[in-house]
Length: 68
Image (cartoon, rainbow, N blue to C red; front, side, top):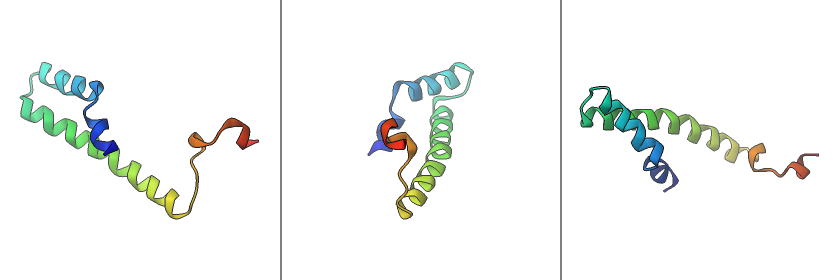
């Protein structure tokens, strides 16, 4: 559900609107935003799958005091 909520943010709509402002049709803008989201989502999910399989915690989720 997170990925769906990430696709309907203001920045995603702004990217689609910018593509339409450049002269593409709205259906082209939808496809461009969708392909860009998939190009972002696929490596992110693959990276998370490796970490979850090896039980590695991301440093972004670790508190600064826990690192030292």
